Image (cartoon, rainbow, N blue to C red):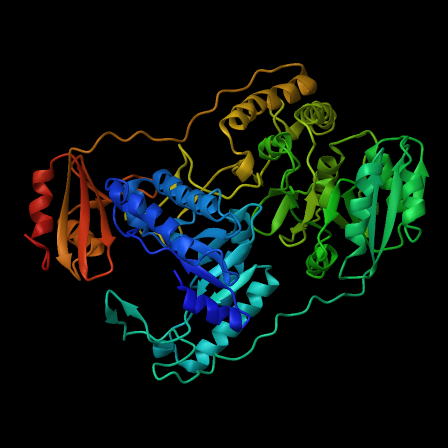
Length: 633
C-alpha cells in the first residue's frame, strides 16, 4: 500500500494510485485462519492511514494466488475469502474501488463483489492476446475489464521487440474495449524476498534509470465515424416517463451519423405529444396499438439508414454505442449487438429484480458470435432485415427478437457482438411488475414453440446452442467442474456452465431479508413462466456436476530453501511410475489406488513449504518425496 508521501506526490502530478494489500496469500490461509484474520486487520489499518486521499483510486486485495494452492484450499473457499476482504474494504471506505488481480490459471476465481475484473495477461502473440481479451469480457459479466499486468522481458527479447509488443498490446486493448492497460514494470530494478531480481528486465527504464525504447507516448486509436447511416428505432407504448431519458442519451452519441425514429404504438399517456414537443428533430410515427413486432417493422419501413439499430424506451445507450456497433459491421457482419446492463438499483425491489433470472440476455456461441441478441440492443443491415421479412407481428410484447435472430441465422447471417456497445437497461421497478413480465415471456414462448418446435425440449425449455449470459462474473460455485489440466498444470484453467452466473444483490441491498425474497423470486419466476408457456410447472431433475471426494488418509508438509518445489516432487513421483490424473480430477497423480495432491506455499523469502495430501498408503509416498535433493528430511 502506498504511504501518504507517495500519494501526495501523485496528486501533485495529476496521478491516481491503486494500492495492493500485502499479506500471506502465498500460504494455506484456510487451514491457518490467523493469516487471513491478520490480512483483514491490516487492510483496515492501512486504509485508515491513507484513505480518504484524493490520489488513492482503489485497492487490490490480492494478486495471483498460485493455482496449486487454490486447488489445495478449494476454489470456492478462496473466492469467498477474497470477497470477504473486498467487503471489509468497502465497509471501511466505500468510495474506493476494490478488485483482485487474477491470472489465467485461476480465471474461475473472480470475486462476485469486485468493482471490475483485473487480469494479469502475458501473451506475446498478438492475435492470441486479442482473442483472450474478447473472452475476458464474457468472464467479467457486467463489469469493466482491466489489464492489470502486461509486459515483456527485454533481457531475452531485446528493447526493440519489447517496444513493438507493448505498442500493439496497448492498441489492441483499446480496440477490444478494455477499461485500462497496466505495463509491468516501470523499472528493471525489482526485489523479491529481500533480494534483487537480476535474471529479467521487464522495466520501461533500465537499472540505471535510463529510458528504454518502450517508454514513449501512446494515443489510443480513434473510433471512425464511418459512412453508413444508422437509423435508431425506439418503439414505445405508454412510455412518457421513460422515453425522455432514452432520447437524451441518444442525443449525446459521439458518432453523429444517424437518424432517430420513435414509433408510438398507441400510447394513452401523451408519450407522442412529449416527443413532438421536446424532440422536434426526431421522426415520430403514431400508430394504433398493434404490438411490438408490428411497431418495429413500421419504424424500419420509415428508415433511411442502411443499418437499423433497435432499442427500447427504458434503455439509455452509451455515448459510443453506435461507434462500437459500427466496427462490427465493418467486419462483414449482418447483425450486431452488445450487453444490456442494469443501472445501480434505486430500491430493494429493484435490487432483487436485477439479481433474478429471466431478464433479457444475449446468448453467445463463442467469444465473438451470438446466437441471440435482445431487441433492446440489436442492429441489423436493412438488406438482411428485408430478406428475412423483418419481425413477425404475431409477437406483441416479447419473443419477436428471439424469432428474428433464429431466422437470421437460418438465413446464413452471422450475429456479431461488441462488448463495449452497451445500453443501460432499467429493469422492472417492482417485484410484481417483474413477475407479470415473466408471465408475458411465457406467453411469447408459447408462440415461439408453435413456430420453432425444434428449438424447444418437450418440457418447453429453449435448446440454446450457446451460453446464456447472466450478468455476473464467471466463477467457481459449489458443484462447478473446473478444467485444471493434467496434474493441475494447465496455463488456462476454466469452468464450463451453460447458464452463466447471475448478478449478485447490489451492495447496500445485500441483506438477509432481500436474500430470502430473492430466493422466493428465483423459485417463482420459472414456474410462472412455465405455466404461461404450457400450463405446467413441472421441471426435469437437474444433475449436479459436483463430485464427492473422500477425506484424505494423510496430510504432511516438506520444507525447503529455494527448491525443490511442487514441480520437482511431481517429477519424482512420475519417475516412480505414478500416472497423471484427469483434467477435472481433484488430485495430481495416482498409482495402484493411491492418489496424491501437492501445493507449494510461497512466502516473501526463499523458504518454501510443499503441502502433500494422500488418499491411500502414505508410507509409500513420504519417503520418496523426502529423498528429493534439497528437501528437509
